[in-house]
Structures are given as C-alpha cells and as structure tokens.
Image (cartoon, rainbow, N blue to C red; front, side, top):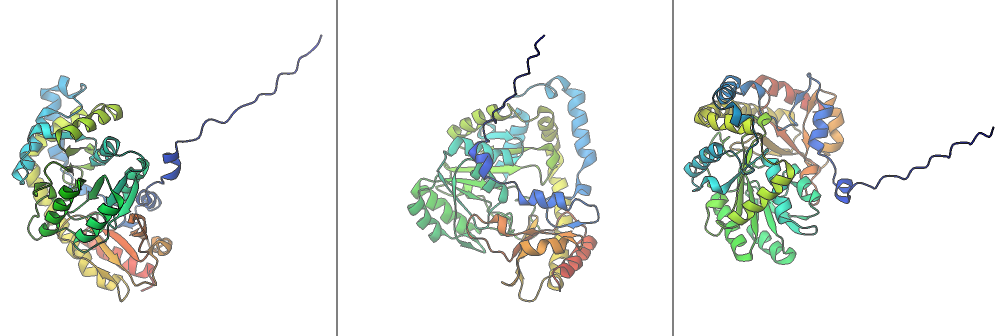
Length: 401
C-alpha cells in the first residue's frame, strides 16, 4: 500500500490596507488617555465634560417618557436626515441665537465628528486642498488626511486666521474649503472677533470657498458677549456649513451632533450618511428632543461650575509653569493653551510629568505645518478646583520647577 504525502500548503498574503489607512495615524490624545487611565492620574489631557454634572435624572426622565409614550417609534428605524421633532426644536434654538433656520436646513449626525466625515465625503477628492487654523483641532486633521486632502495651515494670531494671509493662500493654493473653530477654539481656547469673522466671510465670497464653521463649545461662555456665527455675515450665507454638538452641553455618550448646510450640500451629506450608518439612533434623538425644554437651565449650571474651574487653573498656572511661559485667558470653552520657553519640548517632557500622576497634551500634534514644540493644551473642566490645584503642583514637579 502506497501512502501519499499531503501536498505542502501554500498561502498568499491578503491585499494591503488602503493607502489612507496606512498613512494616517491615530489620535495622540486618545493614546495619552489610554496611558493615563489610572484613577490616581489628574488628567488635563482629555476634552471630557465633567461626569458629575451630567443631568442623569433629567436625561433618564426623557428616555422614560419616550419609551412609555412612543416605544414603537423610538425603537424603529428613522429617516437619515433625523427625527422631525429634534430638527424642529433645534431649528428654533439656532434661529433664536441669530441664524434663521428651518428643520429642512439640518441633518442630525452621530456626533459632530461624523458631520466632518460626511462633509469630507461630499466635498473632497484626493488631492484637494483644505485650509485650517494653526494650531487646529486634531480630529479634523485626521478626517482630512483620510480623505486624501492636502492640508495647509493659515498663519494667524490671538484672534485666529489672518485675513491677508488667508487671501494670499487662497490665490496660491486654490483650496476647496476653510475649516475653523472660531469660538473657544480647540486647542487654543481663543475666539475670533466679529470684525475678523466678517473679513473671512467676505474673502470666501470673493474667491468661491466653502467655510466649515465648527461650534461645539459656543454655549460654554463664562464672560464677555456672544459673538455671532460667521454664517450670519454677508457673503457667507450660501457657502458656510455650521456644525454643532450636544456632547458638551448634554452628554457625549448620546453621540448627537448636527449639520446646517445649503440644500445641495445637505442632500449630498445625507447620501453619505446613508452609506455610513443609515441614521443616528432614533431613541437618543427623541430623548434629546424632549430634553431641549430644560437644556438652557442645565447649561447655566454647567457654565457656573466650569467658570470656577477655569479661574482655578488660571490662578495656579504662575506657580506651575517655568518663568518665561505664557498662556491665554479663554472667555469660555474647555481648554487653555500655554507656551513654555523655547528650551522646553512638551512631548519629550510628558513621560516624566506622567510619573507625577498628571497629564497634558503636547501642542505639536495640533499643527498641520511646522509645530511649536514648547506648547501644550490643558483641559480645565473635568476636575474640581481642589484637584486642579493639586494637578498643577504635580505638573510643576514634573517640569522640574
């Protein structure tokens, strides 16, 4: 009897990942949060709302009402554009804040981060140029990178992008869109004044440019007067996409954001959303629509607490950072931006700071162009004033002060 040896198995490697997946890295902020997740760490790195301020009872009541009164609707598929009751309530809210809006102007998204992804799908082809602030919201850089866009930073100052530099870059780079967080910007906390916003709107109108105005923090104002959206300025009406979020004023776990855009672009984003997730969770949308009735009262409570925490961080910074450091005083939002003397590299220093059980985010990842290695971002809303004071003392030790 002859025994036949089995043939040697052979395999061929699977095809590689898409080029965009190979070239765009993860979020350094998320990486830092994973490393510093120990409960003893006072974490100034994340952009996390204070969990003890979530209105657990109010949100639970909204969910209970929805499930008790319209369970068949709440647990069913919904329209891609979003639940009509939420869009109607949101349209009233936006209109009251100075931008006339109808429900048909809005698309509900699974967090405002999804809105950025949908816009990239609808507007950007590989190789298109996107203009951004310097520094810029990190996750926006990721989205534009995955879209294959060329990202070009617009020089600016404490008031945001410089209009003259913007004009020059538009002529030279022929960009498709300008992405801005003009109110309490992430990461710097700065706010673009009204005159600068009007200049940006005028420039976009003259040169045929989309403006993406991202406003997740605008309701978190602790001092000063509200600055109208760029979308309200002459010339911006037909070319500004306004993004908003319930994450910072209601709860990020609901994953609810929104997008306001001209009709043709809104339709394109809706098609992109159909391909992404069909629609944002129905139950969450209906509960949020109920909660809108008490949202202003809740936000007022949050603002009062966050304002105290901002003040606590500002009071402690002189003793926490080395001589020659500078930082801003944001009128609202969640972040404070600091610059240490040129001899300091905040990325290189982070490991020794973390050993003191405190963390920040180095500024370098937020730059689309050449980074400033001596910068860092501090989130002041997640900890109590007492914890902020202790965290700043640990930071001083970690920096060798």
